[in-house]
Image: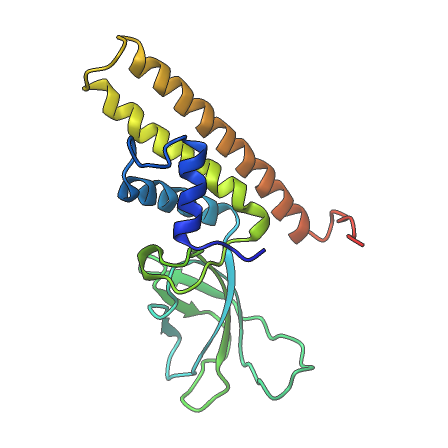
Length: 212
């Protein structure tokens, strides 16, 4: 099963909200909720990416080309793509100017024509057709978590709307907010479990069961 595009995820959210005809939530409102859920999810289980930056004269490198950048985890310099067996030469670095500038702290300083920098970083996930994205990058096994998050954010939207609206009951806003909070609590609990799984897989001190 491939990661779904926006329209397919939206259908799942509409189904869980029992609003397939968009009587209560417009597609724009649902897309907003999906975007919020995707952002929250990405901060817990980001897309791990790698980029190569050409060496220049100096220690400061712009990261503007790294779309959706969350954080830089490691920098390998000097990096020789032709030497696949080389041990990584990890370089000490700092991020400045709101994470848009990479500052190298290594004893040596790159010069034009030197081997490039290999940058290992995390970035936001994308959903095909959401904000012009061409692919969906979220992990397929996390689809239900994403849908749950979108349902939760959509419910919060509607709960806020009912406060100043004419409702069938004076307690409608209270009931809607209670339901929205319950969905949000479920979403956050799912993210906690997901974060624990991610940490366990990335921490070599913790044994990870092998799937066969």
